[in-house]
Image 1 (cartoon, rainbow, N blue to C red):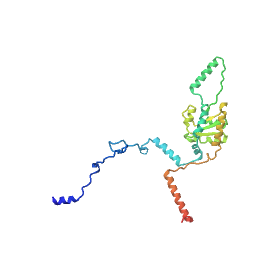
Image 2: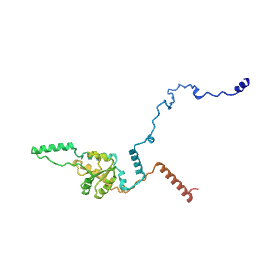
Image 3: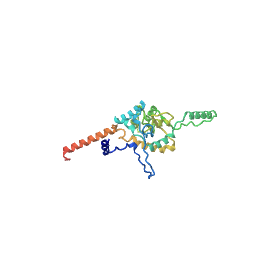
Image 4: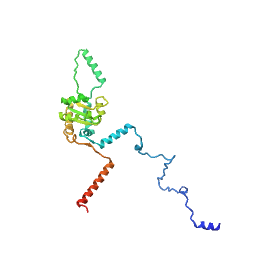
Length: 266
């Protein structure tokens, strides 16, 4: 007992575990630091971006894969030209003009025919003047362009399949008809009371709006018809971030090797 006691007396007693330590928090500061516990039954977990861990529906995955493929693959100029659309200010000006040319709805047509029938029954010859309206339908618009009756052609950028309208810009350039490409076939459809419209055509406007139409046509002619680089430039070919870094690093190495061979760098 005495020998063991003498041996233990020389040894240091192990320190108490961390949980047993009692730390006195300083309360001098106004804001106290409170450690949060994210274990089971503890504090609420912080919000995280779980996009990569979600099993998305198949149609969502196909949409995203198609978008990536369209960025990676080289796109011919005939299809790539639909990536260049009007900006917000230009579309606002164009939409303001097209809203004045909206065709009448079924209710408005019914009311007009009833009033016209009433005036005819009363012996009054009402003026049956046709007002200028937007023309829609790919076949109708094509015929108007070929007959040079269309003053301006508006084409949607997201027509699917794109083969429906991919030849229309070339026809407009050949017939010297101003055209423009805008975002959203649904927005064009709303102007003619349809779900979607591939293209619209303006054939005539009121005298008060003729100046606005001439100005818009001049801008569209310079932006789309006379811009040869727009319909001759290939699209796509955009690689991912990792691939771009690899290609850049490879190019830097090749430049260093070339510099060593030429003796520019010792």
